[in-house]
Amino acid sequence: MKDGTMLANVHKYKDINFYKDNPVIRFDTIYGQGGRYKVFACMITNAEAKDDNGYVFDYTASESDSSADFIAWIEQVRRRSLYVTPVDVQADDEILTLSTCTYEIRNTELRCVLVARKVRSCENATVNSSEATANTKIIYPAVWYAKYGGKKPTYEDGLTTWIGQP
Image 1 (tube, rainbow, N blue to C red):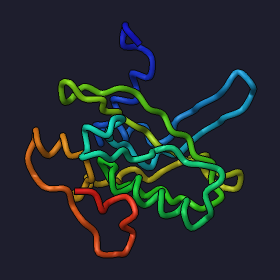
Image 2 (image 1 turned 180 degrees about the horizontal axis):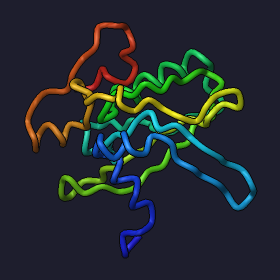
Image 3 (image 1 turned 120 degrees about the horizontal axis):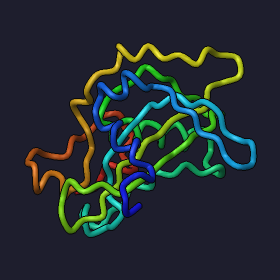
Image 4 (image 1 turned 30 degrees about the vertical axis):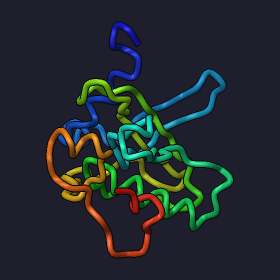
């Protein structure tokens, strides 16, 4: 961590052009698990409640979540993503989440989080990344808006579990 090499490539995904050149990653474990994953989100979020009016978005997926809760969580991840990708995610997909500290704002505990889904056994591992676009309604933590201006977006579709925060 101190020399900047551990998870350093996660930061590169903040640039949509880097994503477009690298929409699929390989992640393997010492246990022979892992494989190729299609990146569908990169977000900046907080790890401490003080940085978002007492709220911390849980960017980890739980195996105990119901299918409906999982899909709602995916939607919340997409709302926080810096860009919109053409990668679909289904309730039974395996998710990989990589998180590392990011330092856009001093004296905060922000994280850069990369979220990807495992390439399904029956599909091609390519992504038409040219379809990726900038997200114009990103949900950032409150400290982001305090520093850079703007207002936290709201949505009208009833998925307010995580966005009803001030």
